[in-house]
Length: 482
Image (cartoon, rainbow, N blue to C red; front, side):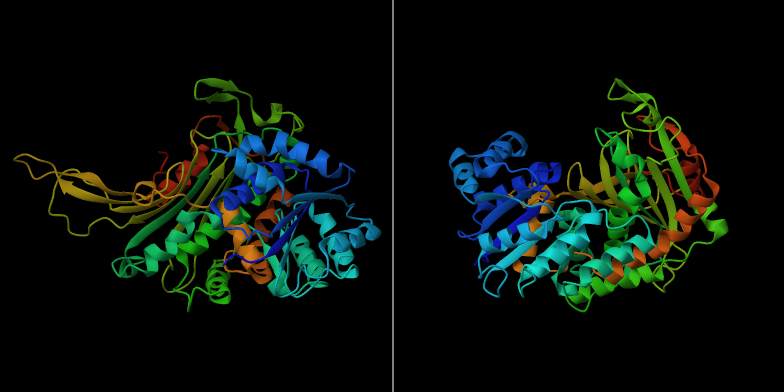
């Protein structure tokens, strides 16, 4: 039975709430997975009133909802309210407490408070929430990234929020963990005896994890120029995919056991040193080029980007997990903007056959787990080509997950919002996990700050800078680009 809830959005008029969070809640509402008495409260600085806020929701959120049903939208909007609350105005938090009432955040009714704001507001918001009596037993605080820009700032955020809320009340969100194919990695590995003996260094030559985007920085030039691909994509999304790919079997699928297994991977990552930062990390920046036949400008010509910017729009990195299962296996992580296509994929490259009896054709086996643009699992095998010669050619066993499971599935934010309402923490990051990721990457940030290296250029519409291609080739891998 759905959990009764109140969900409060700080930054309630912002882009994330309008494009992602409200549409996700609408889909849950239309599917009947929200409690009928659940309420949604948007907060913002302006005194819009409920009608003014609903008008903005109509204009800004509704266009992002496919297959909208008018009646479902009407009943969904009845859940929505609005309150002007400034993150630094303590008195207005008491108005929020009065609107929510005494029941919200007690054991029978979840109170989800989503901080879709800049991180420097986290401390005053949490302090004022506590002062207004809203740090109740069933209150969950959802923290949207960026969760720091280095180790020290991540630790500062953790300390600030922990001063007012227990760790089990804090939900650090990474929407990639809400994607069905990411969770399917656990089922693929641990529910199929076939794969367990193959998922190790003795069988796997390299692991490749890619998140590629066709889009540039769009209207986020000012934000992105202070962030870059390492902070925006690698520290969170790519490392989470690495953890799910490489983790040992958790003791259970419970909150602590899954997160303990991921933490063990992060702690086993081989540390960087002055040499390995320069040998195993490639940062790039896109120049002018073509995307699907359309000319696009280079990063330094984008709006609100410095013409001398050293910010990376591409990052590739070679990592090694120093434990018995993976020791010696290169993990190649890659993410970039303005690349040749939209792609999120994990590929495990097996070692070549040691004693080949077929003298022509063939290539090593691979397993591909694709998250986007279409969800699939493929096992690439060598099969004999018809005819009199004994030649082999690659063929794929292709599981199209959307065809196998055609029923509607919750999107990433929908799944994670429902988990937050239900108090499920397994797909959210814990404080020690967040800090372990930043601790591993801190030497890279320190080296860049000291040297100020020029990013390697790559044309918009290409796959990677040449140095990244060479780094993968040294591991016996060609980046998968389709």
